[in-house]
Image (cartoon, rainbow, N blue to C red; front, side, top):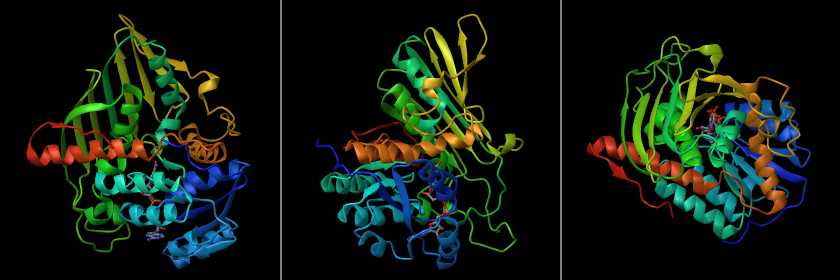
Length: 373
Ligand SMILES: NC(=O)c1ccc[n+]([C@@H]2O[C@H](COP(=O)([O-])OP(=O)(O)OC[C@H]3O[C@@H](n4cnc5c(N)ncnc54)[C@H](O)[C@@H]3O)[C@@H](O)[C@H]2O)c1
């Protein structure tokens, strides 16, 4: 596989989708990186764009992504729009030679994601999936402990993501046509990705989804069509290594507000020790050995951020600020002419697993996952 094309700094970046995640993750991340220039934005809402033009000091805005992709003063795009638009926007951006970071889930199904990966490879551009939690310090340290054998042989992986969210409308997120699936594609897909990153590929799985809240009202009391996606998802899986995995995610866990971050717990039980990542306390892990208890251990400084990142890990809310390193990795891959991590290939592997959860539940059977390519 040839490496993607190198683009020298400053890398001129455009955001496509100027909504919540662009505001919370991507703009602060780009602002921290002296090699990046946020020059333009596209959003289908002209009203939001007008607001963002002033807030983000943009040179160019448009409601049409085709117009943005046609410009030769833009090197890279970050796609942060509803899930059903990721495929056409990626195809347009790659055809125009733009490097692409796209939000998860990359598409509505694995076939769409294969087309996105192929288009970026053919165009020789960097492609990255915005799997945020790979950048959490505790996650980076857990991976190091596994790679160095500090936990012994990994045997079990366990992930819980419990949120206590209102039962009002999720907007586009609550319709299969726009989102593909609910909790499964919105939240559990991150956990399928970091599980594979820690434990290696998933071989087979057995999954289930359920929908409890009808969501027929918006937050301000307006009626809307009911949701047709899941708000609970779960699976058990067997990794190729023979290790086992258990995942559960829900937005309906009453009493799990926990400062707005909700409950996030991911752990590996190895033959020598257990280690735990928790999103609300990402600068510490819990570590326990045979016969003892899990105890908090600070994440050593080399794992608090990627090498070279200008972010000061002592600044800001720990559960928020590690997300800014997504932009650092994307820009680093572009200026160094290398693949980004996680790439669209990782987005495809997670999509294949998430699709298999739906298929497993529909057919009432275990599914052996196909090879990603
Ligand atoms: N990585 C993470 O942790 C994380 C967190 C939140 C959201 N996300 C993902 O980011 C994406 C966006 O989520 P969000 O919460 O920001 O949603 P949002 O609804 O707040 O923002 C999406 C924006 O896209 C715009 N849009 C819709 N169609 C468009 C089109 N064709 N062209 C241009 N703009 C268009 C909308 O007007 C809106 O402003 C989703 O794929 C979501 O799954 C990822």
